[in-house]
Image 1 (cartoon, rainbow, N blue to C red):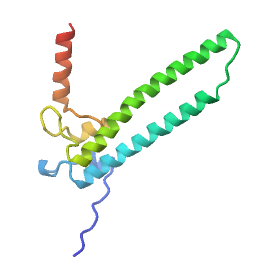
Image 2: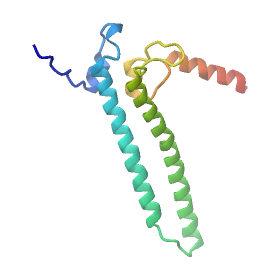
Image 3: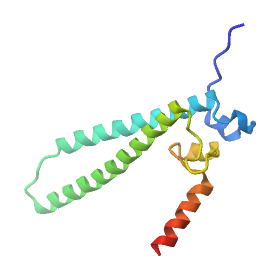
Length: 143
């Protein structure tokens, strides 16, 4: 008997999943998150390309006020792209984690991060509890 391909999961399927822990990060779930991460990666790269094209197309202007406005727009756009570059790095790291079988598990504790958290932040590497502990430690040492 031929094995049927796993059903393609939807966001609602992920939100409503309440199977046994042994089924956490099964093939269908990993496929769902791989697709989500690949879409994020494509979107970030597309935006970066558009930004580069936009910045190259802008003409220098002799008017100081216009030039200041243009420079402020450039600065804002470049800060946004820098954040997206960092996000792209996290997306690619998450894709590697899927390939290596580590995706969906907390880097600190090894416990499942949770499907709902991953839906909101597909690049999460820490469980909510571990993230809160890290933030608490930062507050203690920063204050």
